[in-house]
Length: 425
Length: 139
Image (tube, chains in turn green, yellow):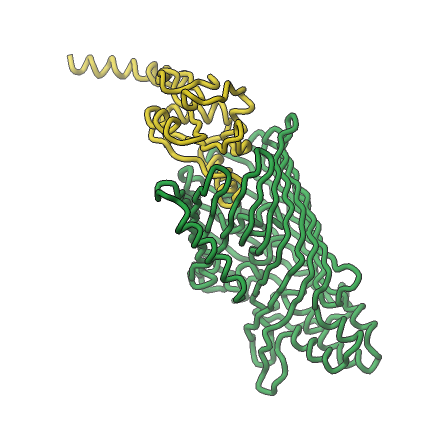
């Protein structure tokens, strides 16, 4: 993480020295307070985006946030922007979400450099700005991980062609991310973490808006991905996180087996497509994502296919919504097994089961959601979401896996209520 | 007499509101600007953050804080208003896709700002036009 600290410092330094007058610096901000509770037998709601922090006891913490953004023009075509975000998930410790320089080359092209937010999905690059979308949280079938920032470049182009407005982005960079990964053990749940390092991240996005009522988006990203556990061990010195267990096993076996058991510089490709229609008070949003490892990847890189559809209708300031989401997530256990001898596979099987039963590698999740948004003022909105999560995880769907007993981190189903107030200024 | 005045005011009030509601507005820049004119589509794109530059100059959009001039502009030109417009601009501002508009206090403030800020473009009521501004588009 040390290397990234230079980027925000650069952003701050530029903001501090650039403007001759403080009146030139524009400040904007946003925030939200989100309260949530889970109704299903004291289980934890199984989404990484909330850090697994919604329980039966109502909490205001995980998704509440507050952000302040400052933009300073350096001359006619160059500006510096820094955004500081404090989230409940991180004990409201302020963190740089953005810190970049923007160069407007002409009325079509703009280049940004620094710390930027990844435009993976339709709402990714403003996932923390609750004011800008209808739900309390973007649908977790697709938006199941924390919004990621990356350090690098973003070249954008915008063009109007008849009734179409087109916006294109090309990005290059790298990012590090840490996500919560609670693991169920015989002695209870242990909160471990998973470290993700993505580099050579390259992506293209194309957004098209037709007469302001139809929006279409397509994106593709390629990366080299390294995933590892945090090394937490039990009292016997055995790694707790399945990724650490696989890495330990790989170091013993060596060769092709080790390559299949450890996700190190795995080449991945993401495909994303989405559509939005806003017409005659109706709102329709649909989004799909697919993540595939390509040749040369290990067998433990996640493979994902997920989508959601939202339908809403505006009754003045009131917007009721219904959402259906579905996510398939798996890993190539077959590739891992092919690399093992029968006797090695016998050792490996229980670990495959442990990995497959982990929430991060579940199979077939369904999300049924109803919600309401009420615009109290143009800058303040009240929102409600009730989500029923259903797991269709079965051993018959995933023969290599061992079905784990339901625990707080391996819930078969869970219902969650979220209430939020969002604002911007 | 007082009661009669109140009655008269009550009668006239809807007509006054109505007159305000149908007042025309204009998009303006500094008098010396080399921008000649705008059409409806370009004006809309500009104030939806989709045209970052005009005549090679980064634009600074002036939105009136509130009032009838703003309502008129949002209804006739942008066809977006209230929370919908806020959500739209939040997305642009907090993703860096467009520079945030600058808030102006009213017609007088817009006229002052277009003359003091390079690239500034705003809207005012038609009745507020004077020699300090150049009218690009009437709606």
